[in-house]
Length: 174
Image (cartoon, rainbow, N blue to C red; front, side, top):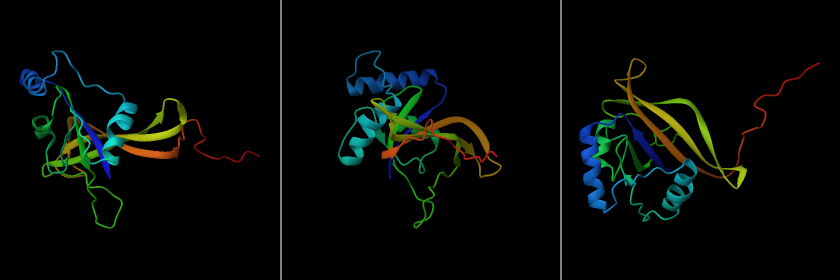
């Protein structure tokens, strides 16, 4: 299972200097920002990577988020000041299970809220992906300490029907 992870936190002057250095390495013009929409992440970056593992996006690096602490991610990014994008393989918690491992050595990523549907803008009933929001906690569950690190995980959901606007429950009124 491939996904794209986007991590972010408040920026510092050191972050700004690192961005300038990264832009010079990539030969990008001053002021360039990589800020794709959710739909663009799915259609222009995640789907091509899944179809062709050799696909290389200039602004998206590859990293195992479970082997890196969130504060190590900015150094591994290709670019970004407050947000960093990475391709990653989802790590299974158990070899035969469907649950994914969301732990690092220093803490864990905890899902927050409900997954957001990403639909085809030309056919809003067609689901193309999902976006999950996770927050990093230092320590071990359930007594971990919440941090200001947030990650958005995007995954492909091709060919499924959007449930937006559909009833979420059935009631019987007599």
